[in-house]
Length: 381
Image (cartoon, rainbow, N blue to C red; front, side, top):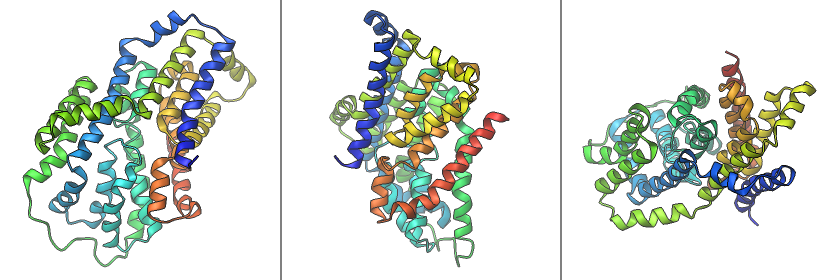
């Protein structure tokens, strides 16, 4: 079994194992579990995860990746901005191994600044993931809001300082690396074409305003944005139904359904209350335990929503007492994902740039540690 399949197997086996273990220790009537699972909020989360996948597939069908390279040179002469735009923009589109999609664009932009393969890998990989803390298209954000029973926009706002922290951590070394480069500006712009720029940026901007500013239901916002992409790129209507079918029966959807059912089992059985009380009475900080579980689950699954789905339900009472612990647990799990050998983005882009784990982790691990420290300070202040 290859590494990506191993990561997927672990991410689905851990929630299943917890479900069976809890029900074996604390049986709960199936009708109660079903009623707790089939709630409007959980159904809304599942639909959102499906439509996020449709959105990503539709952008790919519309040639978004090709149009991006042209649009960047139309709007900026800065080689540094041009370097981080491809990965950060594709980072707005949750897709498996998404960093591989932006890798060729980042590689080309990095050549203008004389960056080596390791530094180019870091820029592409890090900026691909700066939005995952709060962007409402990511399954981890959707799932975290669903477990905490708060709106996606509220959860996104709670997590948003971490986005700025992540951008800062990625930008500082990049500015140091390019400080002595002869020129950080392209000689000229490409001729501006409003049609190209609109097709690339408008669907994402519309989605942002609908979901976060006007607080329109995320599913309706996604459908409107998907329809706009179809209109702008002249994609056949049948493509939507093909993408919808693939998204419904995808591994991501199965994983989300599984961890949401795990949350229901934990809620209805109250099986973890004695464990939480034992941790509190033992003198071990529940926060440290939570950070450890989050990091380990993220590392061994390589999937953020798996870490959220495993950790948040277990420490739900702690999170409800202090919701500002959510960003700490989320970041701990996400940094486990970022250094995980099972993370699809990591596996595919490491192979693309032909680098060793030692070479890549020399930059990723210190950055991950800094993010965890910053998230801890965020809770304390």
